[in-house]
Image 1 (tube, one colour):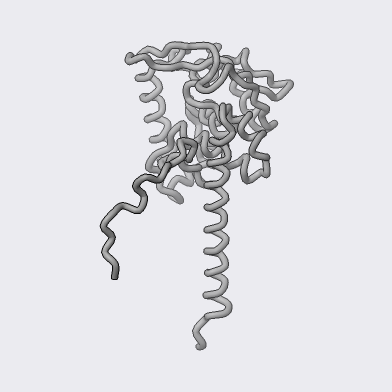
Image 2: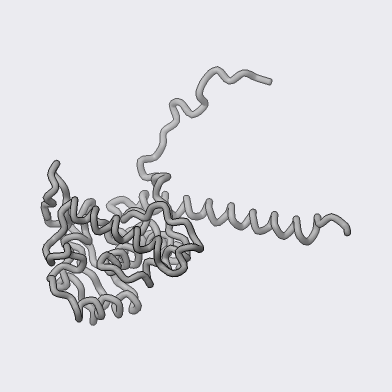
Length: 229
């Protein structure tokens, strides 16, 4: 046996567009809990999961940014922290001047119901109706995760952590599973470089291939290589 004396990965470049490992898509059970669990963070979670907004894009989002008749969300601003609890709103998004996201009818109906009873101009505000600070967002989100863990059906899964990144990655995965082409997905996700989207789609291709082989292995084990009685 040959002794390995050097790291074979040393010197190899890792693309900065590769999806980060800690970002995952929600399971079908988790997605169902996001949809069905009442909480003041629910509408915001739906927007991130079904329209792909980043947390910084959701926080300053107002009802005026949403055209329910045209089924569109205009993402033209984002909130960012500058070493303080207070968030600063700036024009444009993390990677561009902004984008327009087409939304599904199901999401539009949920937003219409929420808008009818809304007491704030913000889609996902603080309890007092104002825009979130970092601390108020964290308190709300911690409360939301606790509500999800206690919700009916939560015993079917083990919810350890759900973040805004996970919800956005779920949106990217739903686009992939729906057959949306990579260029369109890049525009909807607001990726300034399509290589970022290609990396996500390639990663999902690999996952789907692995699952397909697992299914084949299961079939062969049960149908062809089954031990005789």
